[in-house]
Image (tube, rainbow, N blue to C red; front, side, top):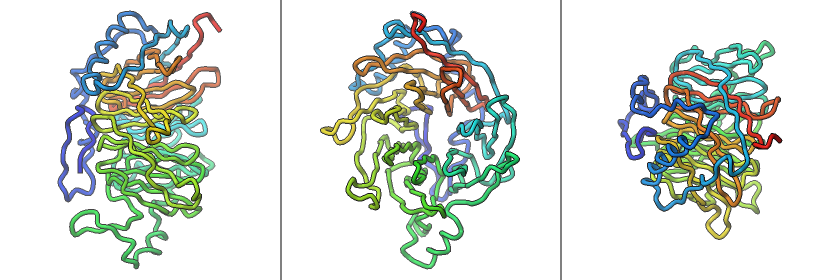
Length: 425
């Protein structure tokens, strides 16, 4: 299989065919000095001066070299939109000095996956209240955390999905591993339950056979994606795997699901694919709706706009592509690119009509949409010493947005973001 490369748009490494999953070093380098050649900005993140705009223009040229046919959409400035932004780092955590691979928020708790363990913090005072899965290093890196029906789901490099429950004393108890033993026993005697994963080796189709790279939930189901190129759907009270699809030609790195059940997957094969049930068949199987092709390298991150009419995709080609619904163009068409990052895009989230992007260039950029489909880069947040691997955000009670960013050196930063009219309203 192929390692997911975010350092160079064209680089890839082939793993030995008999490896059950790639070593951690292939995806998350241990030495921060690998990124010492990256530019480091010392400008205040809350200021967007002419000097910053000039630097952004130069950085955009790197993306233009990769995708010259895609127009740039970041033609607006905060002044044009009559906006003022305040962005400041208000806290910094470094719980285990290990790679932060995923961040999630739920019920006033911050979940931070670092190596094989998941650390849980109270959002009010940032007290570490629990660390779970820390006694199982064989599970490999924890790659995603999701929540459904009062349960916590974690995806791991050992090809498994673990299910946890929060106890009254705020500890996390393991209650199941997917696929469950019951699901395996009811299928193992049937030859149709097995599929070839490589020469002379079979696995049950209900289980992943490579690292589970992402989870996404809808109120009716959960979906998982893996470096084994498959998309799996889990549902029902017994959390059974109800469907498995060979979704891509290379490892799948990202998945998001809409409120209507539409699933978007992004892969190292440079493609984004859209999946849904036929409109007339509520109980039918999920099928391929569209294949979106424009990126020139591995797709690492996906995010949907608040109304789910726009899809954002980030890749190793340094660009964030903007896709919009257009029925005459096979579901979605790319309308342009957001440029400025100098290295691969590693994570994307959309909250309160703000798009946040984290990159291997060690920065976070904040984007907003203006008139006629044009975008504005409101500011650039720097301060991380290594690539920004994960972002999570939510509207703050006092107004604005509370953002958390996690990087490869284990640092988690909290940012307070407030966007207002420059006239004071």
